[in-house]
Length: 172
Image (cartoon, rainbow, N blue to C red; front, side, top):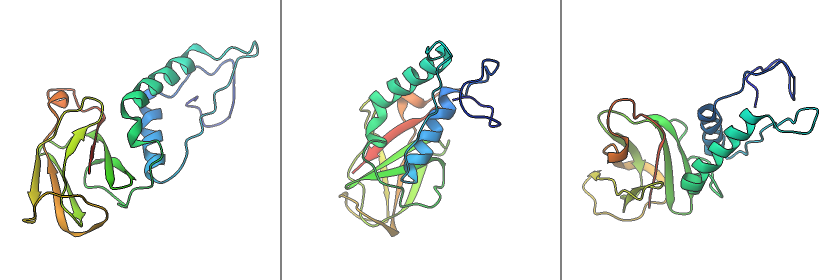
């Protein structure tokens, strides 16, 4: 979990640890590509895990308790690139979007084959307003194509200056 890429494992002089924000972004990015994230947690010579590593693992664990549905047992994103700063994973008929920086004009996602039934912030349960574009009634979606677009307003919990943190929601 050290930020120095010149070596792996524990070095007593290396105190430049990756932030929990970066570690979570890496986890989300890797899950969106169908991969698994392996962290190199190195104990000190006494066998003790350094406090900064323990803190980061605890912070990641807290995030996963609230938002883990978007990571655990998911498949890779059907999108090669999203039109916003975030990543996508899929589980069954549910599309999960991890949004790193919510677009000021709202989130727009095109290419849905069927309309969106609901959109919810996983961590809070907040229902998001969905604007249908394409003239179809609400329903499940299962695959991507050119017919439908999803437009979501920023969650209430993510509004205000400096609030562009990861907002996770699912729809399906």
